[in-house]
Length: 174
Image: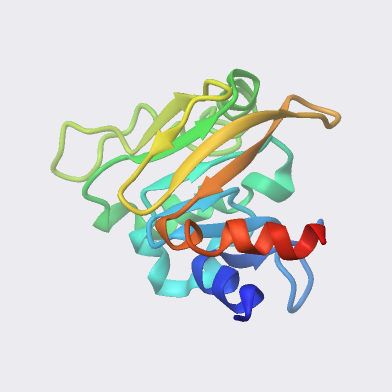
């Protein structure tokens, strides 16, 4: 069984570079049709398919991990039917509020309603470390990680992994 192909079909690496270049995008992983980890390369990687994104889990607040959130909203605001949910550590959310969505650098979409709706455009959700965030097709669990700013990593569980991961680990260990 080719494990690499199975994982690539279940997790799309939309960007893994620390900087934007012609054919390389900054950090962004698609773990299901509507869930991303980090937002460094949403638009150029997904194009119009990006409209399906409803949840973005952030690892930390550095620009290469958040840059496309503002442009995502700019492109899809008119067609959004529910808030974009952005998950992050308390410090990450504070950084976004203070330095990006502050009505100076970019509009504060936590105060702007969706068209013809009482719902706000963005909803920030403070992550709790070691808590499982369960969705229909993926479970994400944030873990403490170490970087120059408060950071988390994620355990990704998907139904399709349940049959391959134990065997994958056995093969890697021996």
